[in-house]
Structures are given as structure tokens and as C-alpha cells.
Length: 359
Image (cartoon, rainbow, N blue to C red; front, side, top):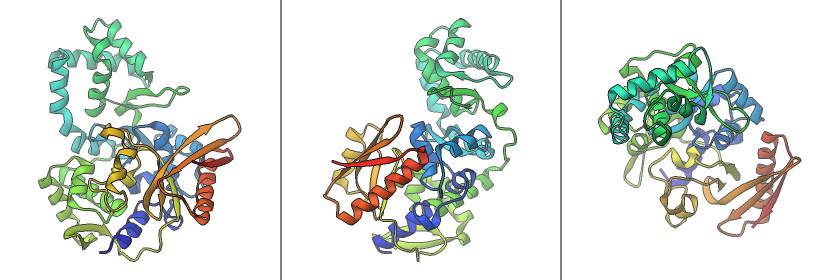
């Protein structure tokens, strides 16, 4: 498989082409399996970028309707996932982090008995469908007399999120809230371990393929053994190609049409974070510009014909958006026009005109 074919097939799988965009929020998130959402606003656009004519209100309405949920399904990081999948996905993936989280909790002075007491406080504070901001939730622990809650509050929220006690509720203004996952998600799907592994592999390779076994392990946090089992379970549904002497798996065929000229992708987008190996779309010497110093904070990317070609950022006023585009190399007039069209699509998502400034 040649790099150009890999990029074209992958961009269509990622729904980053006009002909591949989805019609609804739930369809988009279900297709992707999970979408990175460390930054809430960037996560909204990660969904919107894969839809035809979506607005920010559409994505937030799907959250309000509890069709999708923001939680920690894998790797200890925030994602948007279908609400119905939160149970089996966290049981399969997030639970792998619990031994490490218990160790960190013990370092803070919270043994199993102390954690059990904290859970009871959290359940009492949030029971009956209530939601609290992070600070309020931590304060409920402090007020209950939990020693060390002020210092360990953020860790405890993360711990309880990864074990499935908490998820995000609806935002209050610019602040996110937390609620009890099993009260928020009304009808969770139930899958046994074998079915969960197979379903996860199917969703990953249909939405991220062509991708390698190592990419799948990176994205899910599964062991190599479990990842191989998952791939074997859906083997008949997968196509296989070799590039650089490595097997790449995907669903469907590799006859994708040409990629979109320009995409303005959000911070933490699956275009990069969905893979361990990113050389096909990102030159190694540019990696530090995307994630400075390897600090884990990925910046929004200008993507030209499937490859990262620069950075961008937005400035928002009451009446407009200004999109500052910082390409690595000078852009042709045609690509500049395509960038302006991509920016207007982003503006439409926010319901405001978008003005592009090229740095």
C-alpha cells in the first residue's frame, strides 16, 4: 500500500471528507467508537468536523439528550462515546488503569476503606440526578471531614471516573459538572468480554483504518494478546495491506477518492491521537510544534490533503471568529481559498462568520 492510498482511505474512514460525513451526532460518535475530548470545546468540533452542516448546539443537544456522554473510557483520558456503550467499554478498558490509580490513591493516604467512605460521600452528594462542578464535588468531601480531600480532590474525581462511578453531566456556563454515571446513562448495553473485544476492534478499524496492531493497542490500552484476539474475532470483516513491511488492517476497500484539500482539525483530534505511528501524516521534525516538549497537549492542526501542514487558533468576539492560520510552508492561492472555506465551515458550526488571517 502506498502512502497516498493509506491517507485517502484513512481520511474517509475518519469521516474527514465531504462525501463521508455523517448526518447525526450519535451516528458520528458510534462510528468512531470514541472521540478524544480532553478539551471540551475541541471535542465538540471533533464531532462537528465529521458531520454535514452540524452546529455546536447539535452536539450539545445530543449530550443533553444523553445520546452521547463525556467520560474516561480508555487510557485515563476524556472522550465522547455513545452513552449506551459506557458500561462495557469502561469495564473492558478503563478498569485496566485501576491498579495504578489505587496506588496513587494510597500515595495520597487513601486506602480501600478511605476510598469506600469517599464513594459514599460522592453518591450522597450526587444521588437523585444531581450534578456538581468539580470544586463543589471536592468541597462535599471536605465538608464530610475527609482528610486530605482538598489536596487529592482532582485525583479522586479521576479515580471515581475511571472506575465508572462518575461521568460529566451538563455544563453550567463555562464549567463542566459531574454526575453519577449509572443514573445519567439510562439503558447501557451489556456485552460479554469476547463480544466487547470484537465490537471495539470493528469500530476502531472501520473508523481509523488502515491501522496497525500497535495503533490499536495504543488507542485502546489493551494488551497485545487481547488486541490480537479482538482482530482475530472480526478477521473476515477486515482487509489487509502491507506498507513499510507492516500489516495494516481496515474495513472495506482501499479505493477511496481523493482527500479533501483542507481540514481545520481541533486539538487532540483522532487524526493524530488515534494512532501510535503518525509518520504518514506528520513529519517527525514537526511533532514538537503540535505537542510542545511532549507535554501531552496537542494543538489544533491545519491539514492539507491529509497531512499536517501547520497550526491554527481562533479568537472569538461577539459577532465573528478570527482564524489565525500558521502554515509550515507558504500556501498556494488555491489552498488559501480552500482554507477560507474550511474556516467558514467552522464558523457555521459556531453560528458566526469566520475571518482568516494567514501568519
